Image (cartoon, rainbow, N blue to C red; front, side, top):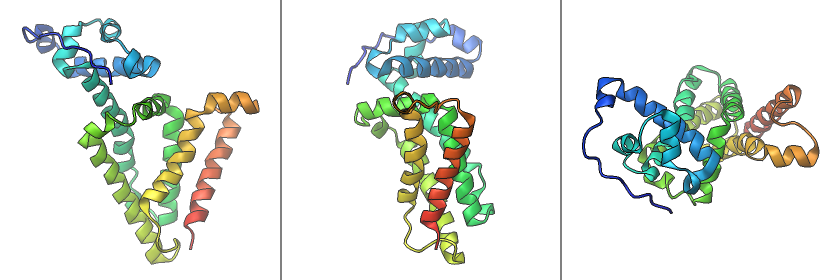
Amino acid sequence: MTTELLEPVLETPRKSRKNNPEKTRDDILRAAISEFVSHGLSGARVDAIAERTKTSKRMIYYYFGSKEQLYVEVLEKLYGDIRRTEGLLQLSELEPREALQRLVEFTFDHHDRNVDFVRIVCIENIHNGENVKQSSAIRSMSHNVLHLLGETLRRGEVSGVFRPGLQALDVHLLISSFCFYRVSNRHTFSHIFQIDLADDASLKARHKQVICESVLRYLQA
């Protein structure tokens, strides 16, 4: 893993205190997402992020400490976006089959609309997950969705609509694999098979139906 040396912070940036430090921090994170998506962890430059946000490297180091820590916080933001929204789906208030369908549809749409998330996850896998494992927040958020999914599977088993013995991790992997691959490999898949995975609305709707039906048939009692 590359390590970019920290520049010493001689004083707290006055501008951040005078204006809105939370907005400044958020702006840096958003610019960092674009830089890491475009160039990866190794190729991303703090200078470029500073230029995008019209701030300084010193300001970035003040907020995040290093390029690597900034990258970890980008991971936490992107994973946090999907995990927080999953928590708002109110699956516990829905009949189990309807709850699973809502979760599958949400996952499909989220991945389709958030290409940056998919690309960052691909980049992190190139680095063997070295940065994800530094984040207890990502692990905690991910366990929450497994708990939510597990509760839905148990409700379905009790009501007789889902077969017994289902594991939340397996179902989560099944859902994620289709939704993720469709975005991560859209360029090669589209060129090889002469289709448009990105913009063909009818194809997108059909694929959403495919994954919904596949998951529900796998779960059914």
